[in-house]
Image (tube, rainbow, N blue to C red):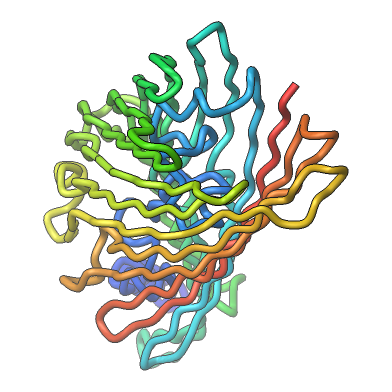
Length: 380
């Protein structure tokens, strides 16, 4: 009898895990589908709402912007996010630690080359909740754990060339490695009699793309920029070999303008679109994917001096839709951002700090994410 109850509970546990709603398991609106698109923004660009991304050499979006850096630079960034999601059935909180951008660059005459590694999609989350199961007349308490780690990354090699003082051109080559490991498990209060159950799956990704961009100054104090990515194939593998899905890396484009009529200051706007629906071939038939638009505005102004060098103070706003829906409902995100740039070692280094409050809504649910971004640049 005990053995029968144990096998019955095992079957109930597996079925309950498989049937658990995706949102309840994830405890998040932002990490649906293949994950959260952070936007590949440096700390500086995030502090200005993303409006400076096409002008920023540490944001791996516009390859032409590499020429705006110094002769050489090394950059690394850390972005923890603290999320809380509210639904009619209650609320849940989670924390995700990300390392969204690292890169190196160097200048050779009119040319600047750079290597970077950034997050295209991050699907890291962990959630645990308690429920009960009734099997054979017994009510048994159990704890369900759902965990996902990994995502899809963007490794880029880029070249920027200074055509003149008012025109820069750039080109980049991208590869997209990735891994996503998901574990769903259930443990019972009486672990000696009933045991525990878990199910794990691992998928690997490989893809490619190219990008182009330019920077121009048509009139004094007005800078224009544009960038585009043209996606190649991406494949999803079960384990290391079997291809279980193929699609295309999303095409992306953006245009930006910045006015620098005040010393040490800039006012910027940026608009972009990304064709996420091209990834549909990787997902299940029930996964709803949307193409997404983004609008950002922000400013960077000169602040107090540190060792004779002005700090940078940044403010921004960002509005966009996320690509992966909750059911059939699009997830909308609006962010308010602020940040500072602190010069170090007489300008041979810099520490950027930004804070973003992202508010996301969909299908009667609401999520608030606080993103703390810390970036360090060494400029030998």
